[in-house]
Image (cartoon, rainbow, N blue to C red; front, side):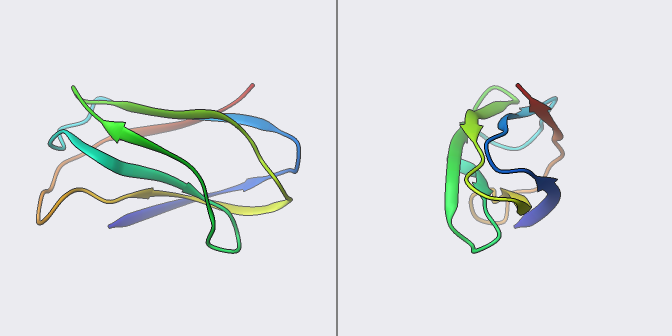
Length: 84
């Protein structure tokens, strides 16, 4: 499992895009988690990519994108956070 952080502001609509991935297809290896550890969005990873959102952030704080491939799978993925 890998985690990537960004700072968000309450009320902002964001989309997380995973692309150019070499991870195996699975569901859901992508999660968006708020500062309290609560999942605010998730997505399957298929055909080299996935997408979470748009999601309206519920609070100011640090958000984590969790990439959790199935089993011992390894690979790479490009993550982009877009403010809508």
